[in-house]
Image (cartoon, rainbow, N blue to C red; front, side, top):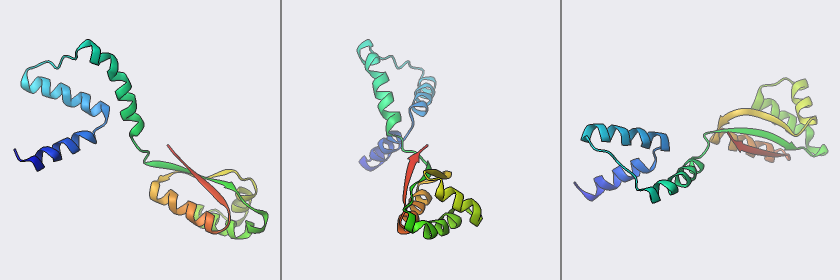
Length: 131
């Protein structure tokens, strides 16, 4: 097997979640009629490795929060909030005046970053949080 193919396999395995790796292990044990027994010393260290692997998984959905609105920027921020949320004037004004408030409960990373840029361009502060 060529080195490029092996590197491709390693890359694919590196991107799998822990649960998928466990399923893969079971499937390989069945197919090859073997048991992948883990020595006791490694078994103790495995849970820490699993926690690190799960922590490295990046969020795909983000919550966008309007954090802070300066009084002199309210009108421009209300316009952006209306554009982003589809709210009417009254709802957008209430949201801006009640900051900090959630603008979007869940959206993709690119959309969240775009919303934050628009809010900051209008003179306010916004934050994102991975879900």
